[in-house]
Amino acid sequence: MKIVITGATGFVGTRLVEKLNAEGHQILVFTRNPERARRVFPASAFPNLEIAAYTPIQSGDWQQKVAGCDAVVNLAGEPISERWSPEHKKAILESRQLGTRKIVEAIAQAEPKPKVLVNASAIGYYGTSETATFDEHSPPGNDFLAQVCQAWEAEASKVKEAGVRLVILRFGIVLGNGGALARMIPPFKLFAGGPIGSGRQWFSWIHRDDLVNLISEALKRPEIEGTFNATAPNPVRMSQLSQTLGEVIHRPSWLPVPDFALELLLGEGSKVVLEGQQVLPKATEAIGFQYRYPTLKSALVDIISQM
Image (spheres, rainbow, N blue to C red):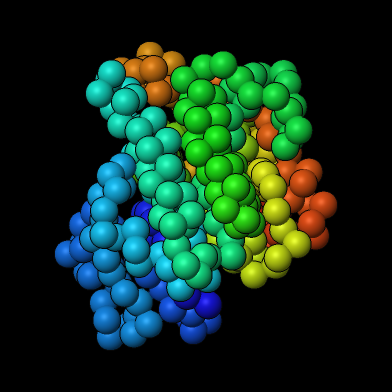
């Protein structure tokens, strides 16, 4: 297959490109920073990879390159794990809403068209709760991230008007060598680790390799269509995450990180971690997806062994 990928140099995108490259697929990376992409994906290791500059929220000549490709994976979006100033909130929304609009525009114009768009979303769609359980049929929340996800998914859904199969994956917190886990481990190693906030909030997670495998299956299996939670089937409370992480790296996990410390760092963005949500991947399991890391301990043991 020839596959277009946006967000290819990110935490999930790099692992996806590595997998698809190893399988012999042709990859077209759309990036705002071609020089960085060339460093991440050197030609010697990625002989079937092409890098093209693009402006995610603007139409341009880059859109013509989608013609003749078999699939598009849209992972692009400004990071949410930063302080949410008004400017950053605008960038979070626009990078997803307008960025997806321009990708869909390119697909609609393409001849021949790609057969499938796999579009990222997030479990922030459901809002936060300490008590509720959410699956793919649950209604959306009404906070900022829920509104972003609804706008994001609405833009992606327009690709169906062009007769293109759509798979929306609502990402949980992705665990791997880097990302969120990289920020959590240093305090534990200094014997200062522990639950963030109350410890009662839910933490719905997925191992990065399981997420990449799910994206790969969505590309290759034409019967997969619709919206799926990209989370492991066993979400945990924050206190259990801390306890398990402490066990795996042989460190205590009793020193909690107070709410105000995270609020100082992330402002409004701290809500994602301090409130959380329990999300179950019912539709994902229904298509027969097999998790390599269904439990938190199995995931952490694998990740820590690679660090």
